[in-house]
Amino acid sequence: MSDNWKSGTKAVHTGTRRSQYGEVSEAIFMTQGFVYESAEHAEQRFISTGDDEFIYARYGNPTVKMFEERIAALEGAEDAFATASGMAAVSGALTSMLKAGDHVVSSRALFGSCLYILEEVLARFGVEVTFVDGTDLSQWQAAIREGTKAVFFESVSNPTLEAIDIKAVADLAHAKGALVLIDNVFATPVFSRAFELGADVVIYSTTKHIDGQGRALGGVILGSRDFIRGTVEPYMKHTGGSMSPFTAWIMLKGLETMRLRVRAQASAALEVAKALQGHAAIDQVIYPGLEQHPQYDLVQRQMGAGGTVVSLIVKGGKEGAFKFLNAVQIGVISNNLGDAKTIMTHPATTTHQRLPEDQKASLGIADGLVRVSIGLEDETDLIADFLQALDGVN
Ligand SMILES: *Cc1c(COP(=O)(O)O)cnc(C)c1O
Figure 1 (tube, rainbow, N blue to C red):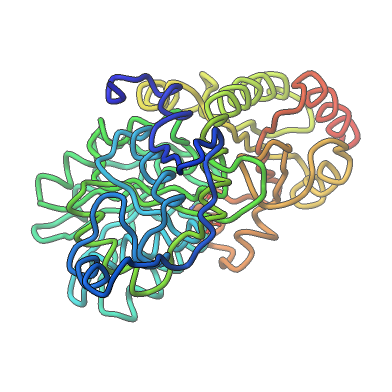
Figure 2 (figure 1 turned 45 degrees about the vertical axis):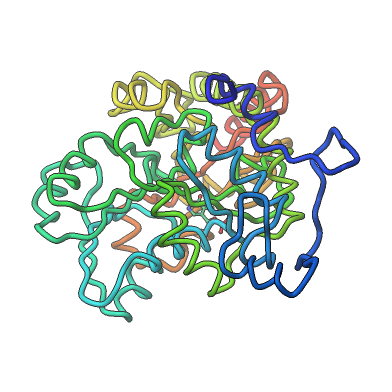
């Protein structure tokens, strides 16, 4: 029956395991280990753990299992492995499946830490990575070769909000036998159709929209049962990047309200983008849900909405951007996204500071660029606040 539930119902109920007390809210099994009834029983568990049997929290835990089952059901994946952070998920997914001599193709526009894994860590272990402009299919086609092990990309890039055509890249990758791994943070599980479009592995930083309230770091890797239990789990459980039961409980509670939050944030983001478009203090409003966005049609097909982040290029470079950031009263200056609070980031001096100037330029990270993650505040207040701040820049 639960397989037929719509996602709203799954988000509230799937994966629930009740203890003998019949608690309504999911229990936090804050335990590192589990007691065996006998020596024989312990021996048996180490040979094979059943569905609701656990041996050590690094390997699995009932609260973490509830979260894994719920997010897998929502994303339409066979299975999931929850991790300590989004980066534990990205690095775990890649390093668990790759070895020296393998070849990977990746889009160039990546979150800074993802870039570090692909550019520095994998290279150190003898994995060859070819970087492409992810929006240019001919570059993917030229780079993916017979024997390429994996392709990796962010379906919507941070912070310039370029969308990559999942189906087209997946078709090219699968023709050469490569697995498709997607960092899907900006699409969110609410607007994701990644598996339907051909993804083999989908990764989230649950720190973002899944928690959605800025409380905890977490991540998750979703994929086939074979990939998750055969490739990811042995690597993660021995290298130590598992999610804590307390974090899993926060993320479970986050999933219950995620759909309502993310839809409200995306609809407010569209209103904000429309209201700021054409303002005299702005060179460009970048929002994938605006018809003016170069990949509007692709984004509508792939996500059905533009997401919760709006990027602005404020006139006057860094000085204009800083004036704007300092004048906004509701949004806070920080570097998370997907939060209930509107959060504003100046990528050129913070998240992407370490990149050389030419790389910033090629990624479109202008000095005037401000990334705005729209929260749950009243959108009319947000718009009025942004407008008064922009008027001050002029
Ligand atoms: C935040 C983020 C990550 C890293 O997640 P953490 O939970 O901070 O480790 C990876 N990829 C993208 C696209 C992100 O936005």
